[in-house]
Amino acid sequence: VQSFTFCASSHPITYLGATPIFIDSEPNSWNMDPELLEKAILDRKSKTGKYPKAIVPVALYGMPYDCDKIMAISDKYGIPVIEDAAEGCGSRWKGQVLGTFGKFGVLSFNGNKMITTSGGGALICRDAESKNNIMWYATQARDAYPYYQHTAIGYNYRMSNICAGIGRGQMTILNDHIEHHKHVQTLYKALLKDVEGIVLHEAPSADYDSNYWLCTITLDESLKIRGQENAYKEVIRTAVGGAAGVIHMVDNPTTDCQPNENVEALRVFMFSKKIEARPVWKPMHKQPVYKNAPAYVNGVSEALFKVGICLPAGPYVTDEDVRYIVDCIKEAIVK
Ligand SMILES: Cc1ncc(COP(=O)(O)O)c(C=O)c1O
Image: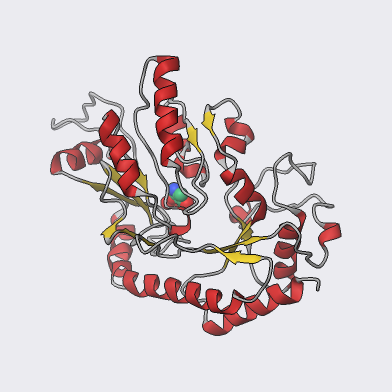
């Protein structure tokens, strides 16, 4: 599984009692590095005698992974791909929609995604048999008797019909949302083009058609941001994004792997301007909870974590908002 991601990509592996093996990213797409993937597959085989059970690439912030290379490795070793396209709903690789390359594709309809059913998502299957099998497991695995008989442990994981109804309505505006996110990205590009020390993350080539779920920038280490000297001085009492008020208190304002001080200062400055900007995902191989999981790294995701920040891009972000956001970024920079 790609290391540079939200924990929802790797936790299901852990829930199943399996061990996630983390693969670092390529610098251009920020997604799973195919070379490292192959190295990891061969190394696992030599160390454990077994190949990994699945390959889970992630469309980070909507950006496609290199489907050609990852699918070629999948075919070569006979290891199925499960695409985590949770953030990449409607993104395309060489014109083909993400989620349709692997054995399965996963989409998220969480409240913050391209479209929402308040929570939940969808699994893209290639055939009716796997769909039936999966829906059977998702519906407590009931056998065909007039009473409740179970020959497998199932789950209560299916989407409610109320949420599905909302989803059907949301499907009608999906293309508008994708267009909007792409438009916001184009506007950020135009407005940030002369800002020294800031780089907007963009598709490496025309093969990568991102939905730009979130627009992300990286800050040069040498860029000075107002209030930088006060970054990480105080313990924060809330989790990123509020997490519905549910958090685990900490007593230390710092960890051994965190965004640079100028990134934290920019986040704080933006917040004072009523703009929510968040650090990019902290790689899973740097998470204390996964400290014992095998990881195949090249330093890319850790380096991006230190310099990256996500900017608002949702359907309510207007052109005027983007101008205001970029003006605030410029104001935050110490000349
Ligand atoms: C990369 C990634 N995978 C999986 C998920 C899980 O989606 P959900 O929140 O619908 O469980 C999310 C986001 O929430 C995500 O960002």
